[in-house]
View 1 (cartoon, rainbow, N blue to C red):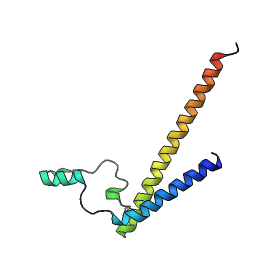
View 2 (cartoon, rainbow, N blue to C red):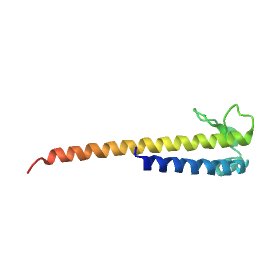
View 3 (cartoon, rainbow, N blue to C red):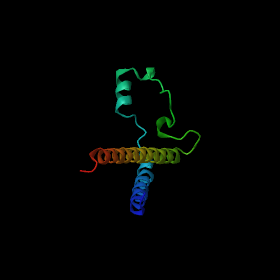
View 4 (cartoon, rainbow, N blue to C red):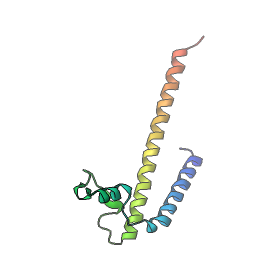
Amino acid sequence: MRRRNLALLAGGLAVALLVVFALAPNASAQPDGLERVAEDQGFADRAQDGPLSLLPDYTIPGVEDETLSTILAGAVGVAVVAAIALLAGWALRARSARREAHDAASIGPP
């Protein structure tokens, strides 16, 4: 990865983390729309946790300070999304390079 791309990536991650640190303490404790409808319609008590609950209710299990836990969960989310985006970009670039190499080889000399 070129230095410029690395600097842009680092800057983007820094901005995203600053937004998480600034806004996470203001996260609402009220239920989201789906939870509210479930409560209003009377079927919230039938809800089940998903099979894989790494960050339940946007918190880090074991961290006692709720605000810190929410901030850390947000930072983990930013890191996971960044990693997925980087891997997808790498895979697409590799696929494009293979396609270009294949096209160049199939054309051959005139």
